[in-house]
Length: 207
Image (cartoon, rainbow, N blue to C red; front, side):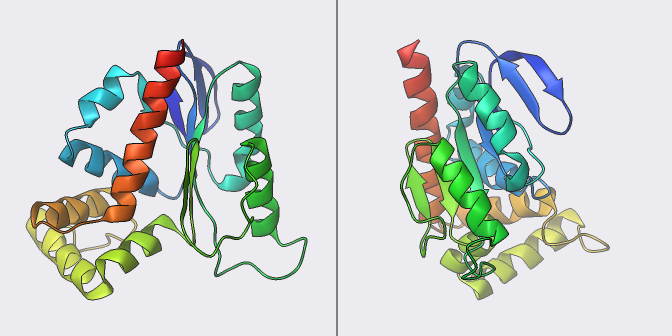
């Protein structure tokens, strides 16, 4: 969850803050979204703008838990931007499937009419829905072999071998930075980051 402003209202693994801007949420998967987005924003020279606009990242501990703080933030007149996993490959045809349920709930609260289990990544004005999971989608776009080489290089350079899992935020940041510095395009990450900044600006400009 990304948050705009100050004055925390609650802190139970998901912090809500109130000020001139809006609330920005992301699904919590060991800070994967934060690692990917922060690294790209810094590389693209957008981090200072992100901070100038008063934005922060806040974890929601899973998309099942996102609807509650989302409704609260909307009730307080804030403008949320969500980033969450669609889990297309895990969903079943069952109408009560948890992924269909959670995705549909967030979609409806965000005022969208997209399929609750989309067959592609979705980037809209106030949310990003990854087709499967952020790690899998970005790794797939880069190419599994290219990602693995960059990851191994990052492990060796920063001594992140023993006990460091692939989802470690430091390892993700180092891998993404290495790829970007080598000129690798990560279009879907660029699009998500650009839309995030655009939304932040629109919220502030509307105040």
